[in-house]
Amino acid sequence: MKVQVINDVNKDFVINPLRSIAELITYGDQHDLNFFEFFMEKKVMGEFVRILKISKIVSVQLLQTMSIMIQNLKSDHSIYYLLSNELINFLITYPFDFRDEELLSYYVSFLRAISGKLNKNTISLLVKTEKEEIVSFPLYVEAIRFAFHEDDMIRAAVRALTLNIYHVGDIHVNKYIATTPHDKYFLDLVKFFRERCISLNGLLSPTTECSPESTSKIVSAVDEIEDNLYYLSDVVSAGIPDVGTLITDSMLKLLIFPMLLPSLRIEVSDGKKLSSVTSLCLLCYILRILKIKDLANTVAAALICSVESFGPNIEAKRLDGFMADHDKESHVDDEKPGGNLDSNSAQHNCWHSASVLRDALISYITSGDDMQVVGSLSVLTTLLQTKELDESMLDALGILPRRKQHKKLLLKALIGEDTGEEQLFAPENCSSNEVELNIYLQRLKVYCVIPLVNLHCDKCYLVIKFL
Image (tube, rainbow, N blue to C red):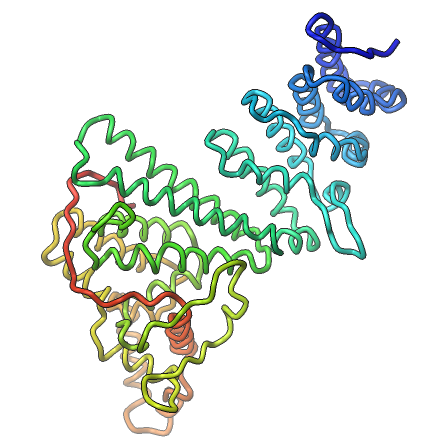
């Protein structure tokens, strides 16, 4: 006889069998497949949905039972049955009362358990398609709703779930993830990371008393900074088209250009401005963990070039998706009438005008306090160790290793001066490294240009690790 009413009086009559079902199915999957055959024959999944519709009292136990079964099932046949049943999407999209923190925790664990069984064959069972295009993916959409939950464990579970999906490598799923409105998740990730950076800066304020408690908070904040960057790095490594570009553009336009680089020269005037020490620290972490070639080379180009080289401020495009023409060369009128700033003139200006940010780093090394000295040296060391950075950038920054400098001079000596061979190295026939440099100099024009101001040295009395 089927249960028709579930209340506080008889709920144990339902909850106990749910627990037993999880144990029996797990045992049967490893020892006797007849258990799961009986599970399918009696349409137990349908019974799960039925009792959930009767009462939400058993929601927690039902989610726990499903999580245990999915996590422990090894048989492909069993996994396919659970995921191919439309009832799994019904449970994913069911309107649970997420004000109950315990229920939310079990729900997210349930979603993560499903993601652990995904591959190129099973992921197609959870999506809805029309004309070979994915129009619905409840597992992903429902999970990222809790991506920025205040509970660390829930955030970690959602991130693990998303990485499981990204690394499946399904072309249609990747396209779905990288299109509007789902691509907004990656923009929100960078905004969330920016808030963590601002929080770290508040902990490093000179007015903060140095105590074991404050030191512990700083360490925790730095650990969270690292965790966020490693997650972004894992997302980029999944190789989803356009996502790497979106994250790179977001980092540059929302954090590095408007906040980090200006803080190397602008005196902290309010809570939203980062100190020089915080900015130096964050640049080290970003360059060391986010191994993105475009990001590293654009930051290096900004360090070696005076903003005056690019004329008046150029309004950057609004970042409501990713910048569609990120990889296209930007043509912006020079201050001279009827002229365009080409690659060669941009490079020439950078070499022969004040490199404000690079000078700031040198100034901190020669006349800054201890933390500014360590921070500046750490940034230069990180740049030197960044494999994604082009050799031309290191040369322009003045930190190209002597061995490579000697190699370059030897090549020049072998070519000779004023020879026909030298024409091979003329601007119009420049090397691949110089071409790369010119490209990044041009790309600076599509990002927010930092106003020139006087250099100020910030004070920071708290200890923070840079590497």
